[in-house]
Length: 134
Image 1 (cartoon, one colour):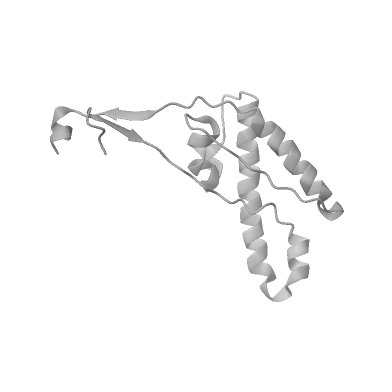
Image 2 (cartoon, one colour; image 1 turned 45 degrees about the horizontal axis):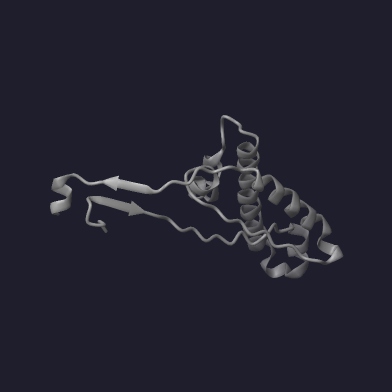
């Protein structure tokens, strides 16, 4: 809504749970009846995570092209990844020896994500007098 001065401020909040990387052999071993559906889901999660990693890498290195369009996730997060929004990323890891490889990969990803610099600003539109009358 207008704040009385003919200006509208807009904001966007995105909460996304990436669910972690999924290893297909682990999924197949857990439940053979549901393995194909879960493998397709895991492949989709891995594609999104891989594309997110490519975007983060491109942004942290100052590349001229960032592949936001390669996945729906990165399209949705384009403002927060390299645009004019504030972003907070939480990377969860486990202490188990069995997840050491995934933990290391998560740490490396988070280090790269820390190097991304955004320029947050207020998204404000100035309304014309006709628009204010509506």
